[in-house]
Image (tube, rainbow, N blue to C red; front, side, top):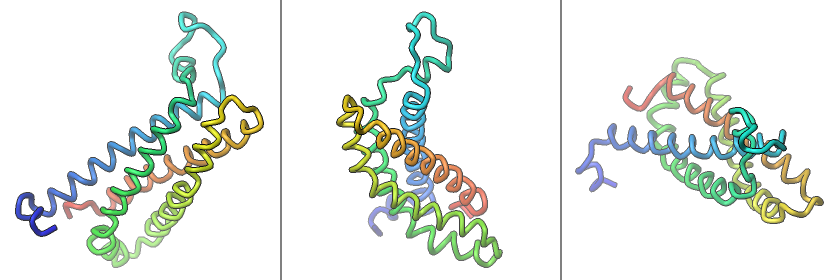
Length: 168
């Protein structure tokens, strides 16, 4: 990677990578939120009768499954790439400041994200059979789990970045 740092300074590179990781995560968060709302409270009104919240819920939830899996994997890969920089330049100063709850929340986030990655095949299977009512509860609970994990990971990532960002 030294050739890359000859073109772009390291701090700028990591900041750009972090921003791109954040943008992919926002897309993932939006897709999962739409899908979760659609399965938790489906709407039965016609499009002309819908208010904002009914429109938010009235998406075809099955259409989001493949995109969610792709966004999850891309976000995971980018996060893994950023993780090397985090372990050396961010985690050590946070430990020195004795912010152990912040570190613990981030460690928990890592485990949840890996668990979410492992659940993607089950999630995709349940959504590829969205017409089969036998998989309705599996679909519902895997989607809700991934949504909660995604929101948690997004918020904890922001908290850790605010405690000690890459530019520090």
